[in-house]
Length: 97
Length: 487
Image 1 (cartoon, rainbow over the protein chains, first blue to last red):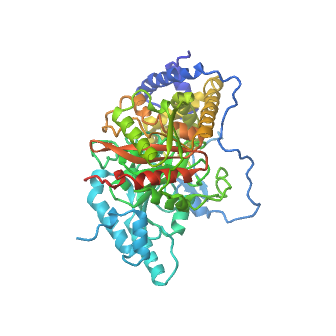
Image 2 (image 1 turned 45 degrees about the vertical axis):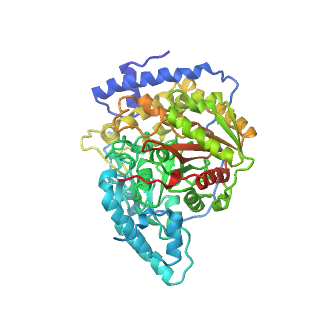
Image 3 (image 1 turned 90 degrees about the horizontal axis):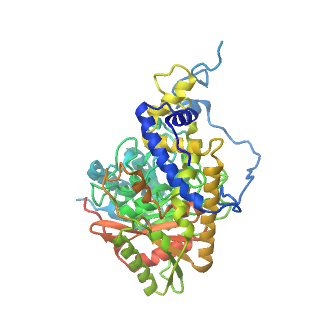
């Protein structure tokens, strides 16, 4: 069985966009390994010919009528923004100049 | 001393308001006073909304004065779990990352209750983002069980079930991903119904695991559960997973009759860790139903023992994706210590999320990552199919399945904090129901000392009516639901 190292945890944390403290990394390493051990019991089951279930209800491609309905006012949409300006959310620079 | 309107059920209050025996305002004030008297000890609410309640009650009284026709929930005080959007009213998911978030629209369930002129008394506490079984994972504070304030109310809808049990509202809404309505209902001695997946719109419910989440009622009796279902069930264009099937009048299912009903009792739901007193109470409840004309047989559902690990792959996988939206850009917390955009995401999420949420995001991200997807997520989805098949097979032979709602009664605050596996076992009987998407209800069926025991009744997809009929029959012929905690 795969056992996660602290380095693995760091890379999963990066993928998850979580900056963890050293203490959190240690705790999660132990904890996630225990859960993975527990997940091993699923390997007892032969599921080679079993279809996966992603959703329990058989609906797909649900469309509504193509009618224009009012959108939220811009000021409402921006009302919860931590930093807004000129009808936009402000975030740290992404593109180098 | 004013009349104790807060002790009444929703349907009793409704009859009195519609019969003009009491005004909606008097009822609202009674609940506001009750919250004032006990909330300090119970801590069921993240936000209490007395001004909104009185304003809505005034509108109901005016409508009655004008001679308008009003619905069964008009003027009835209800509480909303704090992961359902309420326009202009804080909706925190009990998370620091949404400490200041005020939605700009209502969840469909809230909108439907408002169309019926219910009276909103507040937003209830939960395990952060509905992840937990005790409400101890709230990012703000722990809710206390009204039956024993040193114990947990269960979770994640522990604020809603505690508020109903403590008479701090007449009914509440909860959400249930792996048992979050039924397990706390069991711990608090109230009725909790998780409808069939797709029966109730999830629009405006802050998503945890989208293929499992479902909203349902938490009430003082079975009749109230049917009344609330009548309002919240039905197709919603804004939730593409809500089923395009018109909802029945659920109150028509409230019949005192289980003659010929076939009950299955699957032995896997009484696994290791089941309190013998809980088992005894559940089997005594089955005997009550048999005495009223039902038949019962023990049965087996082998896949049920794989429910927990399957859930702890699927739910975190879906949550890791759903919670990606909390990044400090559009709402909620934003760190003050960011140097660039990536560090803003990382620090905001580290500061805003609690330990359990981080852990589940990490597990989910890992289970979905390249190279591990087949071993974990795909495998879990296949086991989910086995679980569905076991239920389908059982329902060829039985009308309902019965089990404990949770293997134990409410545990002490802090008691299982260092043992995450013991905590997860609290949901072992409820998780399979979400996996299969079928409906399940928890009703009180006994006590261990002063602590309530819950009976879970499970039914075929879209057959809430049979669940309600069985639950109603049991309630009519027993008195467990009439007991109230001394707070």
